[in-house]
Amino acid sequence: MQDPQRILIYAYGNPGRQDDGLGNRFVEEMEKWIRENNILNVELDSNYQLNIEDAVKISDKDLVFFVDASTEQIEDIRYAPVEPSEGRSEFTTHAASPAFILALCIKLYHKHPETYLLQIRGYEWEFKVGLSEKAEKNLSKAVEFMKAKLGKTRDF
Image (cartoon, rainbow, N blue to C red; front, side, top):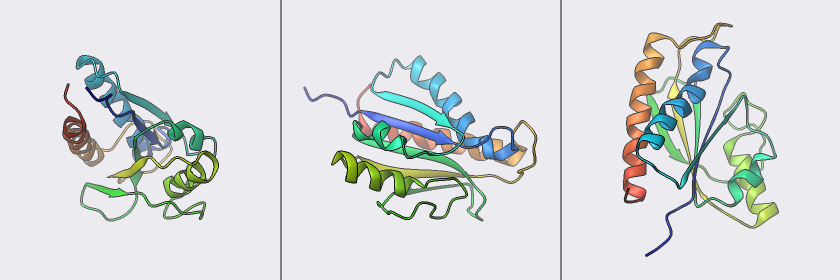
């Protein structure tokens, strides 16, 4: 029997800025489901932003899902592969982009995990804790989407 894929779900954003906290809430929701289903090969993490040190965090994974709130005019969620790029801040207001973290991982550790970005549309960005009603709906869609993705990557 083949070992299960080593999977990391890494969300980032500021929960003190309303919908920018979508990633953090996503991890909280996924953590409940992962615990209930006794899934041992999925690691969860969240932070305010990506940092160069995250290259080592993804280096021992087979599959990485970055999750972030989006200010773009997407319908509800957008899911796309991440291609490595040495541009530090591509399409993000954070210090480092997923593409940059992946490029560092490849350059420093000679590892290239399959990597995706799941963006969840947000609407409100004031200094306030709590998601907007529309963002809550998008969060639910994103969680169900990820559960389906994880279900396809392994047998529970």
